[in-house]
Length: 399
Image (cartoon, rainbow, N blue to C red; front, side):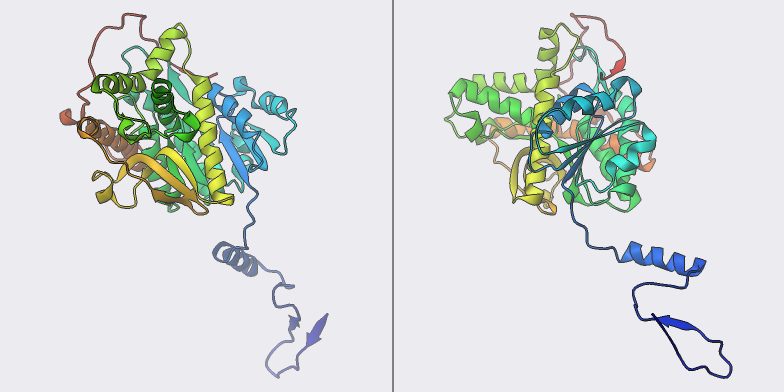
């Protein structure tokens, strides 16, 4: 196995192995060199088609996991939650009884976050706190302070343990948490604008369902994009881009208001106790499924997602905006920017100020800058009226 070289007068004997890819003589210096070689010259990665759901024990996380378990494109579904009361191990055990090919993994507690994220292709960050009831006068800005630590901790773990993964942020408010996630990755030096997106599927799904219920169109063959942002005062539905005929402007105004106030309407119908967890979980799962299909099966269209645009000049002059996108094998591969009519242009201009403020809030808490609320950044559609349904309650963690 070894061959000896002739000795020189002033040199000690040494051994050279035939295999040039492995060191048989071990030392601390060689161990450090090997680790550096593995860091800068990694082995070819074989994707395991793994999706990690952070916050899988919450209502949205459970429902999204239920739909993700049914997809053949997902081979491994890792469920993670750091709160014992969510009992993510019980959720995983329940889902494991479903006779589909996806394998279920469960991780409870922060010490297992590394194992849950290891080698993931897509990471869904959901859960966190929600305002109950949301119909009261509570700003998304206030909710951000309850959820930012959850998102920041998950993002830092993703940057260290799965920097190649696509991050889909669903924790509300998505506008702030998307910026927090993106700038945290920039500080960590692993940011790729093609692999970070804010989930806006629920708003596009609601707009499409409302549009098709009036026109009689098939929802599966129609898309109604929602642009700008994901919040109550930043989402702008583009009904003019739908395939059916034109609407009277009165109906467009009504549908736009319904899309923007959908969370409050559901809250009131459900007696001010819950949000629309079923529809949110379903739409979130569909977004993640489309991402996985784009990575491993071919370019896939997503009706709306908050992303950094490739060319802000072609996207209403906005560097970060929610638009329809196409996902390919390397992440976001294309941007579809719909044309707007005059009503939608005015609504977009009114919404830009609030979106910029929400993005700036997330950025400041990611990089450590001090945040100031400029008076012009306050959305004009906010009307401070006393809550007629109930008294405002504190934020509570999702069950």
